[in-house]
Image (cartoon, rainbow, N blue to C red; front, side, top):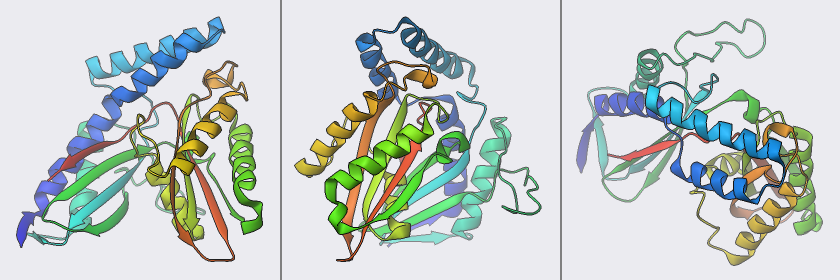
Length: 281
């Protein structure tokens, strides 16, 4: 059994909250450069060039890539041989988010009540925490700030099994078409298929954490990722919704078994500010 002081979690969460808002995933830069070279629209090229300049300035000046610094999504993969000491894990993580957003001068965007009062908590907490137990004695900690502009464009459907692959394709394309320029394209599209109503949504969000240079391990789903990316870009929504070939940079799918009578499908859209950082403890 390995013991880990919860104060380490606080420290790491605080660091990741800042770094994920200052430094873009290098694979995003690679994807944007690739698609920029495929563009025929000069306006689309100019927009993509501006995004690249923005990433560079944010990193150099340690300033947020986007003014919406998001609600903090915290993903934990905790080894079964890990035991925490000196406090409560949830409180330690929330303290890390509060510290990170304060020290990084990041916008606080969380309201205490979703419907009636909607008063800003002024700490960007509570963060959303997702815990999974895995074998081993280590912790994989991922912080993924998620802005509302893209999150609001996400969709879920309980399709009939008879809808099949075409039903999934139609639903995903309709979701992206309806989103239009609102989620600040070029987007990354996370898709969850299977599980249940709630599990499909989580799968879709976790799909956004998959590397942008990876494909689904199942060749059938990998082919579907490629097909959907092409069809999405054929919509010609383009960078910032102003037209062009680059509506999406990547489509990632996660799937799992489901009930014989259901086919849950969720689409979680991420803007071009594709923020997440991971450390192993």
